[in-house]
Length: 203
Image 1 (cartoon, rainbow, N blue to C red):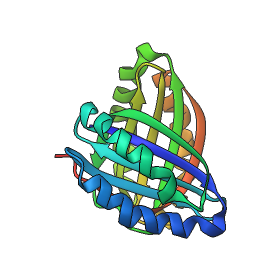
Image 2 (image 1 turned 30 degrees about the vertical axis):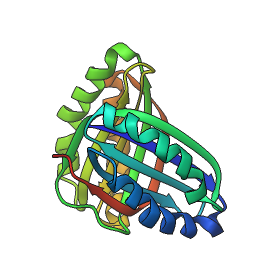
Image 3 (image 1 turned 45 degrees about the vertical axis):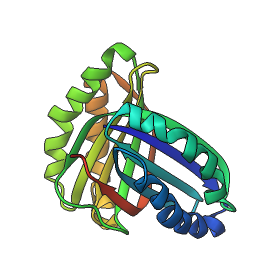
Image 4 (image 1 turned 60 degrees about the horizontal axis):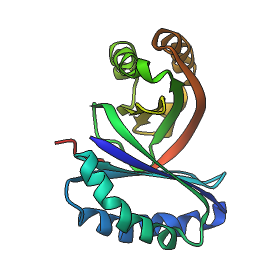
């Protein structure tokens, strides 16, 4: 699969309008596109950050949806959006244990690596991180996004409630350090969000 991520910052007081628009107009637009596989919307209400991820069965399907979404994105996100950043990734790994829930937690870890180490990064996560995550209470699903050309990636771990995500912080911090060294990646960003919507259909 392939994904497009839209990272938006703006006035926290206006984020609810953007959420409503994405969950209505945005979802309708996406559902009309061929090979659409679902979407996630996560938010940091306190700081005013929103991330929308659309999932696609092929790179061509994602690319073909770009034009219509590019034209409609800014109007849908008004008046919240102050800055909008769009990135495209390949899904190197998707692993689900149970469905995420609205109101749950999502931890996002951004990494950088030598492009030649892309598969090492994904394979290390599959072998080392997934067994640990599966043992955590409240764990729902995880994914690894990669940009092979630029040597960048994003790990997303979703939990069914915020308490489970918070309880995992200490253990995941030590594991992150070990896995980063093993996979030869540099962690360049760590954020946590509330899950507003999470619905991916991988098959």
